[in-house]
Length: 250
Image 1: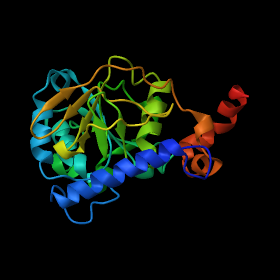
Image 2: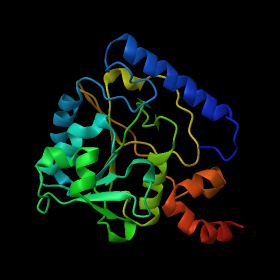
Image 3: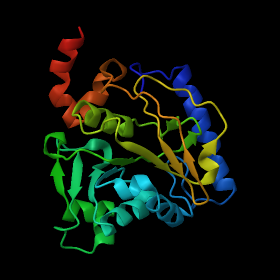
């Protein structure tokens, strides 16, 4: 998510690692065919959700924010079944209120259906940060993570922006736990290059293990200089606040 139109060294290194992990997952048949280029919906996602649900961080959490990808559907469904207040990002942040609010006590469709992208659009209410509760646990989609907590998504930058907006709003704090549910093959030994807008995870969960990561400093909010004008224009919540924010930074 660099400011220029050309891929810089950090972006190129991230893309090379994505390519390596996507190919490995497909070679090992750990994902369905056609998963290259996505947040991979890996086999074992249900077991990962169960392992996460047994953690203290999960039991303490009353509010959960999750990405909308199929890979994290079991975690979203479990959150609703466990009566947690769930916020799900609207794909591509394509609304001025870029999250669906899913209250398990108010939903009138079956909870597993509401956890799906299409179901959330029918059963959820669109909200912005001003209408949201503080977030206890963030579930992020990832292509690769390492044991230091560094992560990369598929390269569009939406997870980083969602977290940054909620940090700026005071809804994600040092008390919030950020979790990456992934397949074991997505946990890499490689160094993952990081930019100013990247957030780290506190806990990695795979079907086989829990991996606590060292707590690291998070971005203070949106790093506007890393965003292109086209990116800002494409995301309504950014386009609304960009003139004021850029005026502050000059």
